[in-house]
Image (cartoon, rainbow, N blue to C red; front, side, top):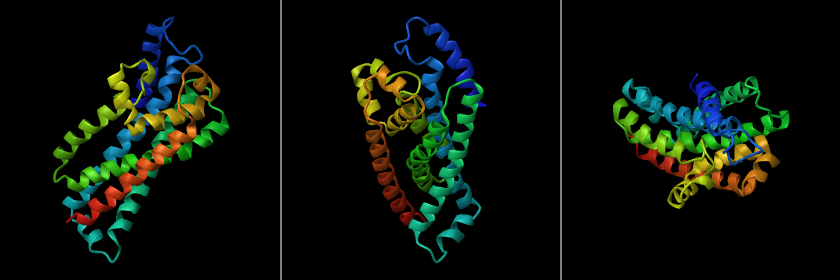
Length: 229
């Protein structure tokens, strides 16, 4: 429901307020934020799923996993891939909601966006698992989760073009991995309409940066799981 509210109420309402002054003539405001809402869904779902680590620890299930004759790397990768697929399913649901709201998405763009969304979730889920591996309570995880989620979302360009930001916010957006994920989705979903509207980096650059971010988070995550008791 949350992505639907953002797309319908925020997208239509703010889009109407910006009518005539919106700087992307080829794309409506609702279309602009659509990939951003997909990114928001992936981010919030991926981070929240990390809470399962704390639940497993409290109920003793994590202890059984950690003493099993398998490496901690395998445990982390298993959790990461499984949770990433769960987040991906919710991202696909938002894609289908976009079709229902009249946003034009070609079948090829729909299919191409799925592996990109999965690539995005790998790094985001890893962050959630890393944070959860250091937390001892649900309350602590909730506080840290909000502290991470909101800056990542609002500095990703999900709700506005990064080019319209002041210079200091542009710098923060450029070091935000979610910015590149949302830009990649806009490339795929809108193609020439997006690239003709703003000077953005090529899709391959977005993908490469996301992949590097995923690798770094997976390495940190496997280290965190190795030290977890």
